[in-house]
Image 1 (cartoon, rainbow, N blue to C red):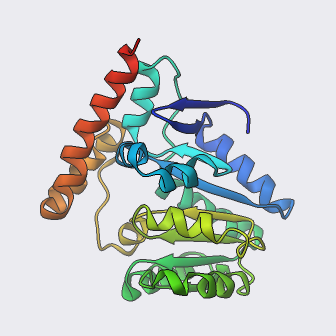
Image 2: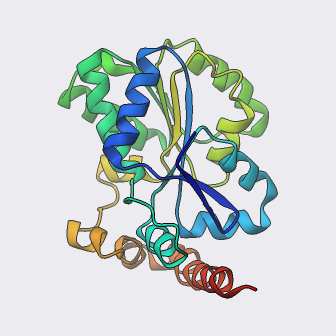
Image 3: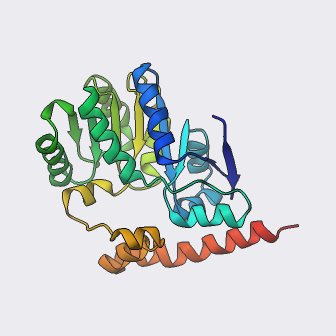
Amino acid sequence: MNNRIKILNTVIDNYSMSETMELISGTIKKKEQIHHVVVNAGKMVSMQSDKELRESVNNSDLINADGQAVVWASRFLGKPLKERVAGIDLMENLVRLAHHKGYRIFFLGAKEEVVKSVTEKYANMYSKNIIAGYRNGYFTKEEEPLIAQQISESNANILFVAISSPKKELFLYNNKALLERLNFIMGVGGSFDVVSGKVKRAPIWMQKAGLEWFYRFIQEPKRMWKRYLIGNTKFIYLVLKEKFKR
C-alpha cells in the first residue's frame, strides 16, 4: 500500500472514505482479498505494550483511522490524515455495496440476539440474499479454526467481526489462511450493538467534534470509564511525547 503514515508505532493508510470504498470494491471484483482494520486512540495505546496486537494491526492490508482523535494527532504530528473513516460507516457502505453487486456477508460476533437482529434488519432493508450466515461472538480459541472454516464454506465475500479488541484482530490475523476464500475481512467492534439498536450512536455533531467516545461513556459509565478516561489521557501523553522527543 502506498500513501501510508506511521505514528505511535502504528501504520495508517491515508485514504478518504470514498478512496477506501473504491479500493475495497475493486478488490472484491477481482476476487482478491483485503484484511482491513481500524485504529482509534484506545487501540493505539494498547498496541504500545501488546506486541501481538501491534503485529496483527500493522500487517493488515488496509488500516483506517476510526477515531477523530487519531486524525487530530496525525495533524499535530505533521503527518495529516485526510479524514476519519469510521468502521461502522464503512460497514454500512459495504452492506449497501453487497446489495447492489450481489455479494454475500457473514456476520460474526456480539450476543446471539444482537447478531440475529442485525441480519434480520439488513435482510429487511435490502435482501436476505446478502446474508451468508451469522454466529455469536462467544467461543474459545480452540474453536476458532473450525469457525473460520465454516465461514469460508458459507460462500461469503465479506466478513464482519464484532468482537472486542484484541480478540477480533487476532482472530482475523491468525485465521487469515482459512479465510482466504473471502474477499474482505474486517473487525467492526461494537457496531452490531449500534445497528441492532442496543446502543445509540452519538449525534452527527458529536461525531464531528470528536466526542463520540463521550456519548458512549455516558451510556455505560461503569464499563467504559477506564477505557476512555484513562486511555485518552495515555494517548495524549504518547502524542506529546512523540511530538517533542529528541
